[in-house]
Image 1: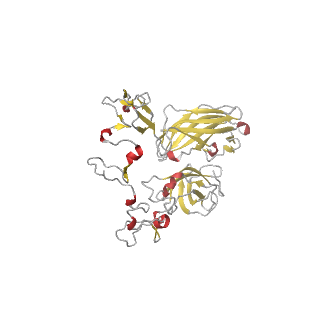
Image 2: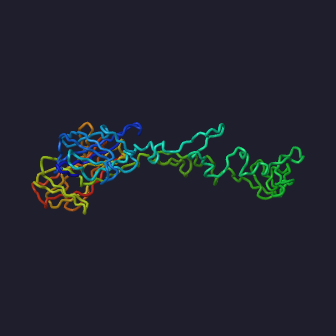
Image 3: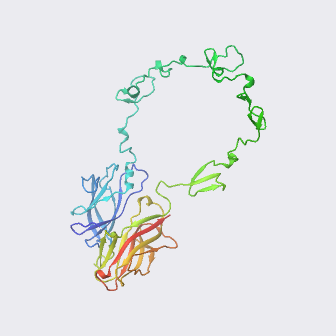
Length: 443
């Protein structure tokens, strides 16, 4: 929560890029926020809010600015589209931050860092460069009939970097050597019907270097040995045959028993059981990891449900990693903590699997008597996803979990609501401590 001079503050609930058919359309960002007063109470009404985009988290000049008149609901929540009155002409090829200011107040700090989905705007570029910044293949500068080449100015790149001539006169040479300088198959020197051999002058190369006869009668032998017989037997020495070598098998297994293909799917299966046959291997979605996702929720973002009363004071004890709920009047009260959903899960069907909370009570008496996860839908309605009315009264740090038998579908922004009961007690001796919170969601 970030306070400004007139006592207003904005809590970021959700920030994402609108789904579009492709990234070449107009750049529009969806922004949803909540306006509260200096005490953290929602402030419904109409406000002129200025939004600016920077490439620095604290300094620099705004790369884009737009002012819109927004109207908040009874909970101080508003939702707008950025870029509708002033085009967002930014490449999105580096990190960016969004600055927000209400009316004539100073811009709030710190700035909001843009989610990764906004960088889709840069997908029609290569390392931030437009296609016009790359070198084209040009024509042959009037040399009719010559294939296209790459040029740097008027200098052909192969001449500049390779130093090799491309004259047509050398097109039939290899490393400057003419074809007549290489060894070629010669005739059979009058031996009619004999297959052509390679010769070095008048000496046949097979006779010179191999020392083996090349008679036609021995053409089916290896080192003078027969290749075997019709039963598949082959010799291991002259005159001795080795039977049944299984020459077409691997470790006694036929090719039909070996792995022939790998299939990407959702499970790993091996068939048959010996570890051979078809194998299916898990696939991982490019949109993010599969399976359940655990989201850590900071209790420091808690806000008081009743903006007209000052029943609670929330104190962040960052050194010890917990939030202190301090009762002012001793009246029962509620607090909300918004949950940020990872960007790679946006647009995917997700269900709430569980919630886990660490807490303790300073002294016997106060308690947490209701824990809920609430979904705020786009039509303005809300629904309880998880509700638990068990009294939580431990005076030492304890963790409790709520696991619904049938995980409910998440179809909107979600918040965690705690109901605190102080039974009329107030002051430091009746404080409640909220520590680590996590929720688990999955398909």
